[in-house]
Length: 329
Image (cartoon, rainbow, N blue to C red; front, side, top):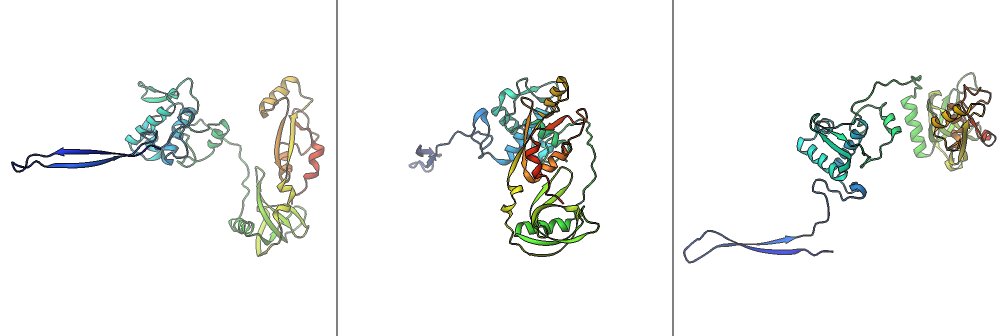
């Protein structure tokens, strides 16, 4: 490690009395400085990417610059100022820092007065995935969640709102955290009216449409799924002796092997392979055993009789999967 040095200076002042001259003596301690960027506080890695020592605020703004260049195709200082509420000098410093990190990524268009991505642009600060961008299109814009500026006209397929009562959700969450058993009034698909069930919840699941809690059913003495919307009331809470780790269907995973329907033409099979990102004519989805039923239902694979034009894919290992498809209420 380099040692600090002391620099001594004597600075003469104006003459005082004729026989005297006055001086100021300064001892300046010089400390070694590591290689850090003058604008931020980060050291750098490959392509100058800031490390975990970077100032969080500037790091977020650098990600914003990267994101806007990638997906909006343009950026200027006012974007940073408006989005983060920073000053013009700070926006200039952030852009200068980004240009030090990835000088080959960005060009300034004097005519349009904006920064544009270069032809060889590659994300330099954060991972920029197309799937993440598409998900962000559905979210509200905020500094914490969404960097999207301009966006295309977009419409989503509507789904019925599966309501979850706040009081029910809170009590189930507390029961999960505190390892408790709750007595709930539950409307099952298998009974004409609601009944009181004693369950020990330990997790929450989502099938793409509705939320449920994974719980031990003390009546059936097995772990099952209980849909939140069907829990009408939580009556009382007790201590539970159930060990969640004994829920093997939740703790263990299995592979769903998917492939194009064999009755499709070669061109149709190729289209399906592209749709699902298949390699060598198949794709493997790994899921918890307890969620396998919902995955197959979402994919339309809970039935085996669909025509190839209606059901483009098939489950190749159905015989290994079917024993794990009956754990929901």
